Image (cartoon, rainbow, N blue to C red; front, side, top):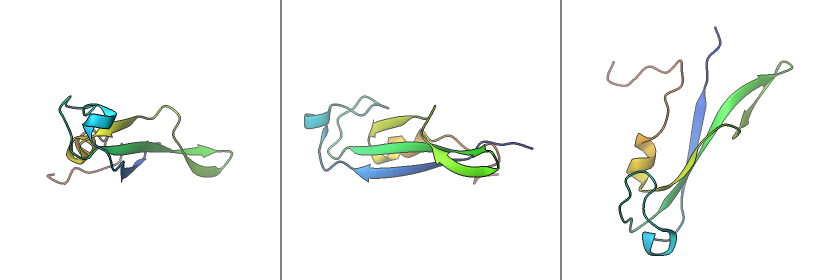
Length: 80
């Protein structure tokens, strides 16, 4: 069975919304703006790797970015 697997990287920009604008998720001011990059695992000619093609990236509050993550198709939610 095929499934989609995602991974994420979050880094602090060291800047606030005053320089970068509001959180892209909630639209509110952020005293520290973070940047999240999403990557998707792929299989091509028998080899696996990671790509950002058709993936999302956002600037905002760390908590908002984590909430915006997609579950991998094979993931089991923690509350299950």
